[in-house]
Length: 79
View 1: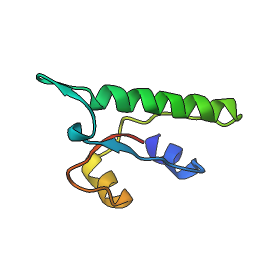
View 2 (view 1 turned 90 degrees about the horizontal axis):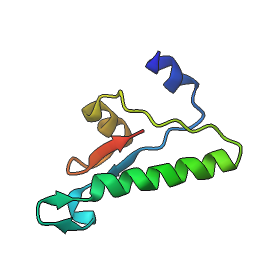
View 3 (view 1 turned 120 degrees about the vertical axis):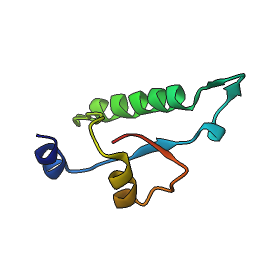
């Protein structure tokens, strides 16, 4: 099912980050939380424009990073 979803999509957006791009307090790294919040805002803006937005979690990070040419040190959070 995922394959068909991706093949039929008009656009894929890769959302990625790394810990040192955000605040770190003690042992708490906020980059995943803040990246998630930014993803939500992007999705809400797309829906507001009449588009359909769907976050995708079931993907192979290594393969997707190769396809999207994402640097190894980045964490691919969602598509």
